[in-house]
Length: 185
Image (cartoon, rainbow, N blue to C red; front, side, top):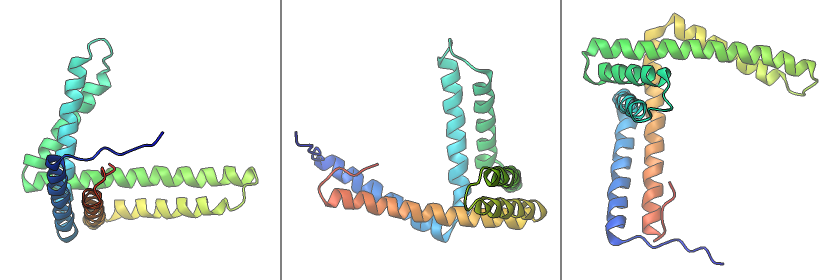
């Protein structure tokens, strides 16, 4: 049996082209103004908070208190980052940076401990996990010791990376429309 991809309607092609061009434009903007990622991230967190609260309210038989706590936390954090004062936004970015620093320390120490377990099991090249763990721990300590510089660096790197991914995603969408086939998501 032959698998044929359905042809897109003219309206869908136009929508895909417009969406792809918009995604490319946002990507280019992010590459040149990476701090915009903070607002995009904040909007996503805010929206996710609303989604969690709606899910909690609609699922009366399978509720979890953690869902409503996560929903309210996401909603409040996203609202502060979106609508708060510039100082509140800076504190939000620094808070994210501290969470990333603690995460890096936990992951790094986990890799270090895990590498010695791999060594005991006789796994070749176990030391690469050790090196990765040490590097991650060093990054965690650097993030904690220089939070403002680290936060600015993280925002820059994540913004540029996300911008590049948006550009590639938009180009992929355009290529799908221009080739006459349904673009893969």
